[in-house]
Image (cartoon, rainbow, N blue to C red; front, side, top):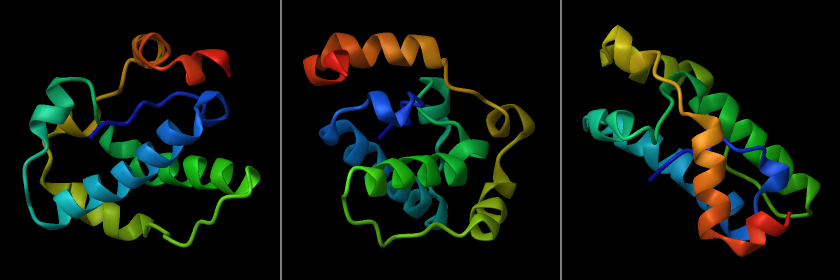
Length: 112
């Protein structure tokens, strides 16, 4: 699981839909009380952006004509993030590094 935090317009279908699913997977992980520190340590998860990132991805999905029927409740996310310490909570994904990683892995994203 990871949050690319790349402009959704620059993502291919596979990565756009994949990251959308992974936002829901992160939410499920938080609901089960499973620690997410490893994702944070590896620069793969930005806790405070979970809801807004989901919405950005969903907006791009709809713009492309894909179906989207899975909302995320911001209040629920806020409640679930309470157990994180301040450093974990405010961790940010290195967007430039993430973009470079994405386009090196995916020729379709690189083309967009």
